[in-house]
Length: 282
Image (cartoon, rainbow, N blue to C red; front, side):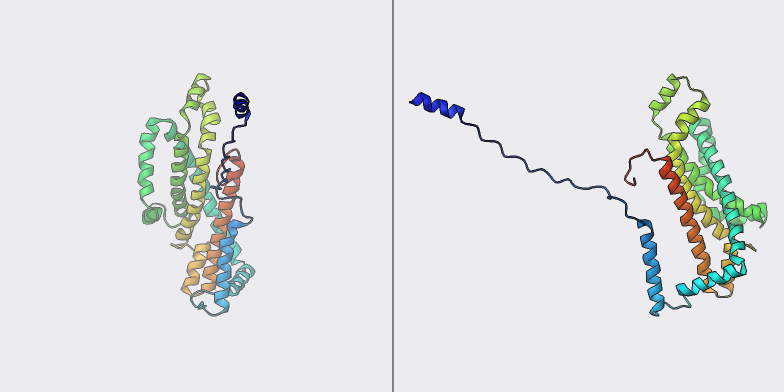
């Protein structure tokens, strides 16, 4: 009888260990993108501006109402002044940006691939980075006069630094194993630059380009308000003389729109060119 009881006890199933409660997954990333989320803050600012002007909380002598600025836009377009100044400013900014991007990229590649190049180039670039471009305007006026050359050179000097810094940093961040693999495969210098250097430095270059675009417009605003007879900066400066707040705001709105559009174009290029990356922004 005792044997049977012992066998029954041996056959009895052992109690199952308590199951651990599945841990709820915590979302650590920023989440999916919000449609038109980039424009939400700007739209909110415009709504507050409109409400403040409509209720009288904002003095029109300090900040003109949105509908007054729209009227100034219509008048400037009807007179042809906005198109004329816009074309001149756009040509100056794009010329300086194009030349500055080429010079900054070439200097970054030379300094990134050569110790002698770095020794000769990196120091002057770091000195230029510490000196605001706007502080050089008096000297540039003595060297190049007050014409178009001085304005474009000022934009070039402002653009070179971010392009060089970020491209050089991106290039130096390339994994050394790719360099060793290129040497093992006996790639030529040009093949190494095309297949390894340029793709590796592309993220840094595009980041520098975003800063460069912004600096080009900022520099343009300043140089066009110094001894200029044309351009959006001149139009704003002339409106300040006559106390035309609505024209000043119209010019600022154009600058802001140009900056946002330029940055948006670069961001679009960045998304297309770096679509292979998996980052928080993707």
